[in-house]
Length: 330
Image 1 (tube, rainbow, N blue to C red):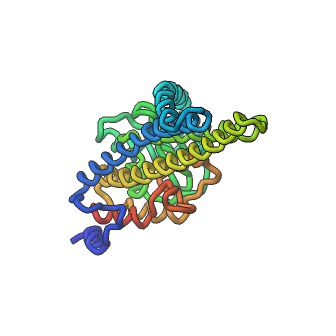
Image 2: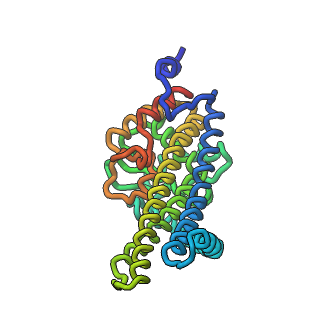
Image 3: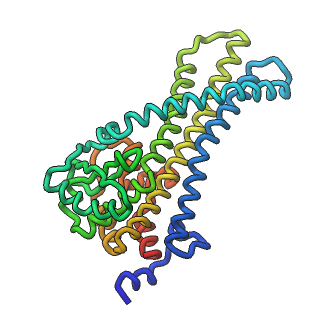
């Protein structure tokens, strides 16, 4: 019996690792993919639901009809408004598609590098992983920091980038670095960067709507007449509804991010067949993951982002849970 097998038998899978009914790695991957698709579908559903509630609130508060008629009028207004909201969201997606890679690199403090000795080492390890899946080798980006971390970005395999910190390159041996690169390569294979960009755009829609509603509350002219009071009441209710929608969108985004990390760990096991190297790499990364000030939207793309508060809004699962899951299926 190998050391990794003994470890796998001794460690009990955590609640997030292997749900009841999951028999092996393939089943685990399938179940995580299915749940991720459900989480992704929840974003437009949430956007439509919030639009409908806002329209009903508008007709209930500002209308003079009886409540039943106001709800019907709100439903009719929502039917007219929802297509426009979805079109505006699609336009936002188009902009995100055009700027996503350079924006992510800039926000992560990374620069493309295919020629330095560090970049050549990364390419030497990641190229066989890409070839094994029939994919082009991702571009390499380096981050000038002593922190230990890595990320993957890109809308598709053709423009994929794998970024690593210099601290990671200096600390990990080749087997550990290959495991980390296999994790990031799985993000590329699963198009996780695209999924996260989609989730970020939806959260951005709610963030913009909340900002507009709050500005309306701040700058709307005050009036003592009945219509003015009704309008202020609607703005107040709309702000509350939009904030609830934003919190829900954030929770969905973080849940999606956490689930994709388990998926990428599983993919790394498939690519390298070396669970011990991935466990060792994650253990080292957990000791020094910081890379400075990075926007939350980009931080969730890294292999590890230490939780800093309520678990519901953590971008990554605990390292202990991930290690236990690796040992359980590895």
